[in-house]
View 1 (cartoon, rainbow, N blue to C red):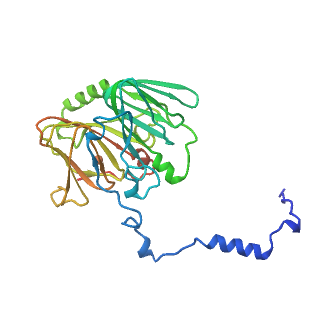
View 2 (cartoon, rainbow, N blue to C red; view 1 turned 60 degrees about the vertical axis):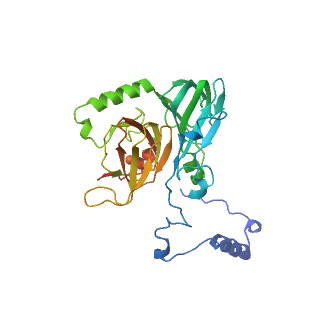
View 3 (cartoon, helix red, strand yellow; view 1 turned 90 degrees about the horizontal axis):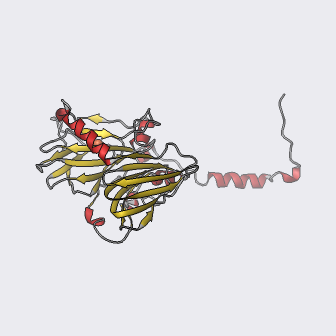
Length: 327
Ligand SMILES: [Fe+2]
């Protein structure tokens, strides 16, 4: 049986004039563009393109305990600290015996320990997490708590989270989507060594481990939003270019001078990058690889080099928009 709502009395109905005013207010923001003026708004003055940028290790080499944001929000036109439209990267320096709170309204927080030792305390919705970290460890935390990072020896961490994405959407996280997960440095180093020694690895496009979570089998990523790769660029390697629609916030874990990444938007007929920009690596430094740009790592240093790119490729994979391509 159809239910009919109670009709309000005539006194409660807005006057015809009031309805007109309301409709006119609702139409105030409506706007139309010729398709040619708005089909690609990624340009200067509108949706700003993602710039090339790199940051050196001097940012975290000394100074008091604190968070150092790698902030491009002014360049990106973002309303809060952001390194890419969806992600924010930071260095965190913590003096021995001190603590730093890493607060963010984010669904995913990833920490990589560049140096030092300590413990991360985080009270999440229904449990306490305590992660004892040392150099080379990586750990991820879901939404729901404000981690306190306490250093037992002076420490530097790289921290990436997705608060800029949530800020753009105008939302706050409502539930954790995975459990806190710890990838010990000793395990990562040993597994990467084994991978590098496998037959065929020398000819592979990348010699790298992708960090994944048993709770996220479909994306094979470190969180449902973030993607993390622990990789080696062997001495004398020139990796063939590839590209993807996820942005990369690359951390250089270790290298000697003479390692660099070539980045560009087009390929030559021989598969090399046309008019590439060269980004020199620095141990403990970071740089951006913009989405959709071809990139290739080259090692002329005579020593192996190690990197940790963090991307929004968990989200891009879920959206089926990752579009990874190899030259
Ligand atoms: Fe890449």
